[in-house]
Image (tube, rainbow, N blue to C red):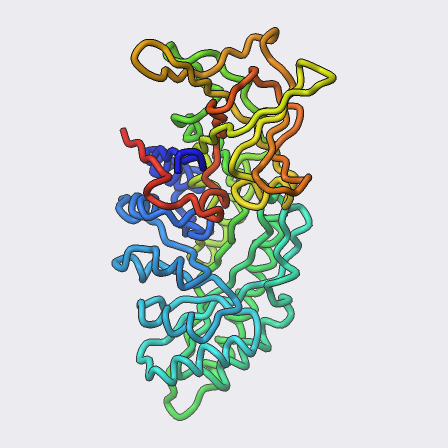
Length: 423
């Protein structure tokens, strides 16, 4: 229903982001889009049809199913703790690279592969535990093996599972919303040291082999994870929904948000020398798992005001109620203190029908407003004390940069609630 709100997707932003990422990392880091961020079919198709290299980081059966089948070989099943059903499903979809962080996960994957009489070796990528204290949402408490455990896990795989599993690489994640490039650099150095120690062990084992056994293959993959900001810093953020853009067809909008503390290009510039050295000296393939980076700026959310309440004590204060709240689309308000500031879209009856226009933002016309979600919880507050025009029931609030971990989680992904724009 329209009263529940709808999203606008500017599909032209996605290939621009892919080009920006590729350029920022000088074509030596291959992005694997974190599908969980926004598993929109047309976004995924846009990435698969690009001439630039791009893979997919999937953490569930649903995400693997969402990726076009002809791209299944470009998927990393990047969940260190998978169900037997998920492992079987991924192998049936020809997904042969997956992460792990424990001996039990090795046993589980190997058992499923043997049961299926899988003929191809499954590439296993060890998820390392690295410092993530500079991130908004740390992930180390749930996933990751300490670096010192890597050799033990290699020996376990070699001795018990080398008929179906092969150790191909190392991955890590510095946490969502990492705000310090040094956290990436430090983690890359830790991962490099682990890769080199593992390959030294592989070389020793190969030298000690007897009876004509085939050599173990050296590890070749370094996955530097995600956590990249939605602002790319390379020009691709100037999308159709940027509320800082004022054209002759719009009324003045609220001032744009302050520049982000860190852009993906700044991270790339800071860590590129380290990555380049690893690629040049050791020949490793380097991939990353950006999610927010690709889709944040491609989506805008439009919410209809269904109720209005003005303060009895102050005529310049109001509460506007919308159908999306902090338990859905705006969950990041609770999760990581994210701030959402809307632009107002007023609807007036003029002539033969409704005429919509962005509300004037002349200072004298603005009042302090609190935007509340639909639940009965007192803390279902999207934002407080934002300056907005005096609105009525039926007017709209437009939230920019809403493509990451928002509408996909809140169930606004259906065709009836999403409008695609293409150039």
